[in-house]
Length: 161
Image (cartoon, rainbow, N blue to C red; front, top):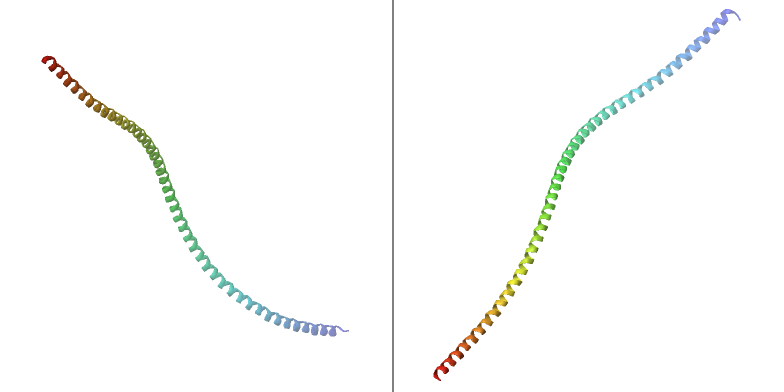
């Protein structure tokens, strides 16, 4: 084969190769543009999702702020409850002291009540003895009067005799 034929064959094959390459390039270009369009759609969707996530982040930040405020309120309430607990502990101590004092007062009153019972018993006994003595004194006075009368009658009889 001559050089011209080889060159002609090479050029025709090169032209076929270029044609095939151009066809492949066109196919790939159309495929790449379809892929680019898909990526553009995905980019738009991702941008929309990014906006949504940004909104969600903002909402979550707002919720975090609210939770922080609630935590502060609960801490304040807890501190107040601790103060109240301390006050109640003090009141419990005071009431315990008052219970002890009341017990001691009750015990003292019971002793005094027992003494009053003893005094009442003694007074009743003295009253009974006084009443008996009064009755006996009355009887004695009657006997003395009788003896005086009897003695005066005896004296009168003696004087008459």
